[in-house]
Amino acid sequence: MNERAVLQVKGRVLVGPDDVRDELWVVDGRVSYDRPAATRDVRTVQGWALPGLVDAHCHVGLGAHGPVDAGTAEKQALTDRDAGTLLIRDAGSPSDTRWVDDRDDLPKIIRAGRHIARTRRYIRGYAHEIEPDDLVAYVGREARRGDGWVKLVGDWIDREVGDLAACWPRGAVEAAIAEAHRLGARVTAHCFAESSLRDLVEAGIDCVEHATGLTDDLIPLFASRGVAIVPTLVNIATFPKLAEGGEARFPVWSAHMRNLYERRYDTVRNAYDAGIPVFVGTDAGGSLPHGLVADEVAELVKAGIPSLRALAATTWDARNWLGRPGLEEGAPADLVVYAEDPRDDVRALAAPLRVVLNGTITA
Image 1 (tube, rainbow, N blue to C red):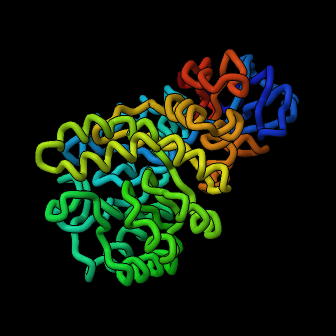
Image 2: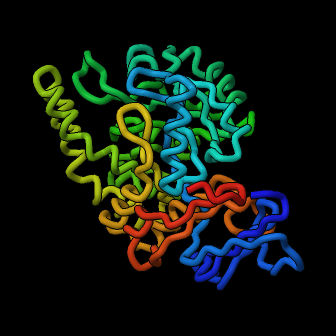
């Protein structure tokens, strides 16, 4: 789209859950609600428009065995874009994806640096693998490398125990989270199990990924501290297969994983009902394909979250949580248009009519 080209979006523009307008204009790549005085050409798109969707747990630049080449990372980002995901919180990647920032045709990325894990306690090739004495230093390093987030691996299978176990002593995470906050970064952590959660939350963590171990006794603690969760239910769906693969060597772990899977919807619904902020994340990258944001929203609805709130978890609320604009006047024109109203049925998110990124129709 050239400098004076204008896009008109007509129909229902969902600026917020309670702010619905009849039209929106895109002028020089930005949102306007005032009709331009003069334009060289106008292209009109009609339908239901939302702010670009948010995937708050995604891994651009990560493959099954660690970092991927730039061409593969580009395909990952394009797949997310074409599914309507225009803002990604990259929850840990060993690849340098700063080159994406120079591409107006790729989603905007908020990076959490590289995963920080305990030695031999995570997927090989993904993380910095360190011991507790080095945690503060590595958190400081990744806080400076990222975009306001740091990602810890809070728990993983301990082969000596034969089950999931917390990775870090309480004192180490307290000091590490304090260092991140001193540097202006928020901290999130991969957590499947119950055992790692209390220490992390009481140490001041800002978010927990997956949170499958969130139990009734821990829910009030999360709610009182305002700690968000990103359930990644499309990833939790893989637990039965993982459990089957580990049954022979780690039967206790396998049974634990099956239990976490079986109560996944109750866990998410109980968290939501208690007022814990819940956001959409797919865990794309590694073993999962990209472009699953609509599936994750549908999973939140299946768990019992009302459709409008599940929609907010990938649009208005998610952007506010991450400090990025939606469809406000003058904001970058990042939006998705649908043929049907996603408020009526979130499955409409699976079929974008048009994707507009930085004011240009890309898909």
